[in-house]
Image (cartoon, chains in turn purple, brown):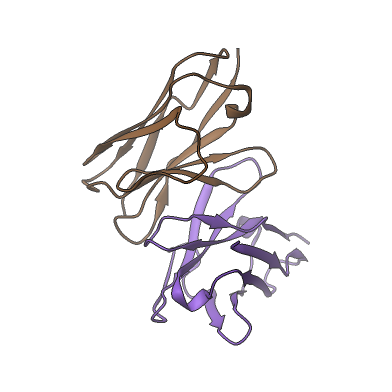
Length: 117
Length: 107
């Protein structure tokens, strides 16, 4: 069974950095489209970033140049490096996989990132 | 960017009711549209990919239709476990975008 487990969230001060991890089991991450989707408290879903099986990466404008998605095939894990964090980045961050581009058929449980002084 | 809208933003319904949620894209997205269900404190769950149909394990009371810019999610007979928030999402192009959600609660 496919499973995704996120980690790395927590309380961080504005301007700080954080790296989220998404450990996959039951499938190989470099065979699927892997994304991060976030949800601010009480708000809707916002797509953040995607890494293709071929390695191409794309970002939402709101995080471009601040966030970096990457993948470690040996650990079957996807990462989201988040820099220059602000209060607007406070959210639950979900890792999601897609066998078909953009159709997220598996999700992790989410990890909460709180940006506050 | 493709903007997604949903209507209504919320609705109250009774067990057994037929419920219809509408999603509209700001431009033609063909059939690149998915529907997700999210319950409080939980991750979203894929219900339907309009192009490929109902996800495995999703009850047949859920159905999705549409193409181009207008799409519909229908629950034929609302069950207690269906009270949740529903999101549409386009996968036609980057950036991937979600609708604002429709909250379905108990009348």
